[in-house]
Image (cartoon, rainbow, N blue to C red):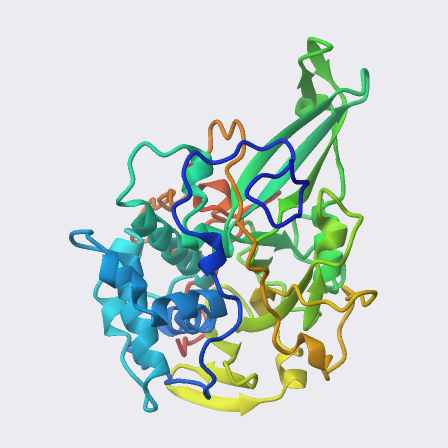
Length: 444
């Protein structure tokens, strides 16, 4: 049996799938076509969040390669709404156009992507990303019935974006170990110190590695939050620790800048590297580096969740970086990319590490090593598989409707999706994304 972190459908402690819905060897992590950036996207009124997310997805190499092949639409038999068909049409149009286009295919199905979305109202980019990826996942599952959880994670969408966390609880009394596994499609990270309800700029995490380190730091369970040990047959003190058990091909990170209680924003610059080693945060922390290369950064510009604007930086198939701000597409340097107030970070996994060379999870230099310029995935990589016992959790593609309340009141933003939308990890507090109704004037 393969161990955690290896390129295999089966990781230690996890159940193999009964069916494999998409052959993992067909997922190509390297661009199959080299070209400059495609078209910008027109803003039809408060749609900057939608444009920025669509551009980040368009420049996700393994997803774009598949959609450009038009393989999905040629085989699709789904009646009505199919997010994969819509994304296929959108990506092909964007990458084959020069002048800015209207993302009409996506706008037409806006409410199908998320029933709580309303055209003309600015939405949270992370929420829209989660709903879009989940809609693609549902499309991949539409032709299959009664699939086990493990098999559901063998779609091309989950093989690209999906991974698994391990939650390990250790009883202080008897030292018994209890493991559970949770599928995720993205990882929301706290960037403020644990335990502080008020956003304090000087208490925010200074870097992505620091936030990841906090994510895997053990929590102490006691008092009202104690653990019911099956071996001791009583409530006991324990430690609980999350680690990445199966790493995704594409790692999507949300830096939780928006506070549930204050509606404030952590505007402090959080440094993030061009190349990230995920190995220290894996269940199996020993071994060769698990290197990821940055390819997209989504930015929220604004001082609070009540106003602002979304735009992004993406790395095109020619290896150059571009700032994509609605209709505008402009060439930028990697130094500029690494100095942004990032909200969402997108990393693609690399596998052609030279023997003996290791990536640091500290900030990389502005010049990338040449051997990393065309990172590739092993043809033997077989994606991730479903965990045992995901009781009480929504299957991949599930969606939790956002709370509404009095519609006449200002909506502070969607709460953190957490498990229901496939986001990983502990949500110590709810997060709210930007809502542009009120506060400073919205450019979106």
